[in-house]
Image 1: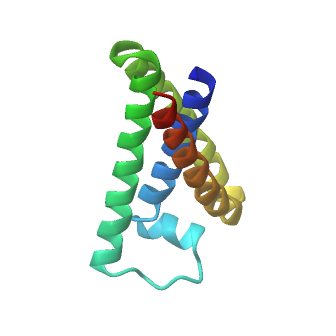
Image 2: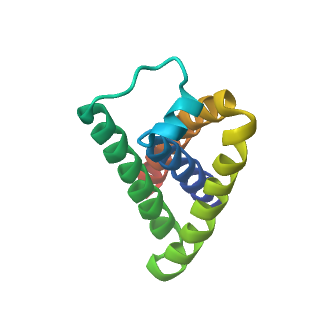
Length: 118
């Protein structure tokens, strides 16, 4: 269970950071160069999605390890997920976008599996 929770928390943190990166013009142009500049509503939707995924990632860590250890583990997992995104943005932005989509799906599946196992 803890391995699945760690993988799910890492995946959700990466997807959340990718969604938050889409709210900034510079990173949006890197990740989605063909996409038009989002309106205010789309930017707010990406921001809300990013923070929701990060909160779900934190919940998944806390659910697996308890609140004190889960919070510390989440900070480490979120930092690792952010580092992967930061290193991918300049060199492989299209891959970073795809990886963000895949990790979102994997993270949500892991969260559902954690709920089913609880």
